[in-house]
Length: 155
Image (cartoon, rainbow, N blue to C red):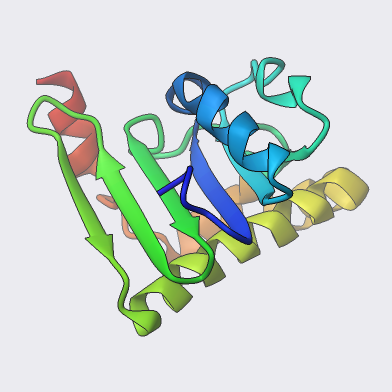
């Protein structure tokens, strides 16, 4: 998927899942393809080595939430996506259905918006909604969201 991209590759994943793909991403960026990375974790320095990559720490900090340390999400050219979970019983879903691709790309776009907002007004967001949006998570996020997947990681 990465090497066939013509317009963009957007990835949301832990840094350690993206690093092995750097040679393919660099080759793709060499052809003028936009690379946007939403990164979980605090050491994204290897990903910032290529100035053509746009790198955002998840919610401005790279904070892991729920099953975020086992999930890899990628969209390519608004035409296809893959979401993979790296657990003891690894699984993945691929689709090129335009409606599904739209939903996944919208999710990644909203991650970019959040990262941009955190870079400009992070302390204000924290004061309004709690650190790492904790008040919103408590209000809207199901208590068990991601737990089944996170549990599979430890099995």
